[in-house]
Length: 274
Image (cartoon, rainbow, N blue to C red; front, side, top):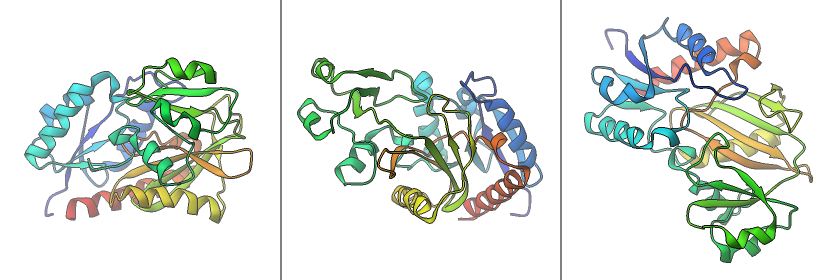
């Protein structure tokens, strides 16, 4: 392009995320992106009305769409109608499309926390002291509750997922731009999910994370692969976040933040040229 690309950056700077500072992260990241792009910020509820005239819309810390599902669908429809590029692209198969992928990955035998959504499939779950029940359209632990096995038969199936409550050692997240691994963070204390520290992944850990990035088939975009270390030492997928993954950039050293921003700039340029 002869001129600098124009990006509409979608973020909810005031969203009250527990243990995370959405606004701080996006203020810092957009400051870095402005060196390469003409950039404007907007709230997710304004994106559909403002996207025309921009070369791409970058969806970042926009909060759970559960609270504005109708407006989010309108945004997607308008982007398609205008032919506006959206980053991440709208054909993601992870959380962007709901929680169906947990069922699909379970059925296909991938290393994921076993997940069912029908009472006749409860026998497929391993024995556990408690079971997690979560809405299929949920996010950010909204609607999550734990019940005993005998309570599972009385659930209103169709809109919920059921998983065994895993007594994991810790949770770990792997962060990718396109198919390029950037860094990993983990929560040593399972009771403090967002108190994160840098994590040095093994080659087996990275193979685990990459299998889900490859499965998602997004050529461009930011993805976070959330996993837990099971009692047997293996990793199990918790979530494949491909809509607006929080990056916890404040938890990594400055050189890692700079490298991430540079990689994101390169990715966005390739995305606009594709």
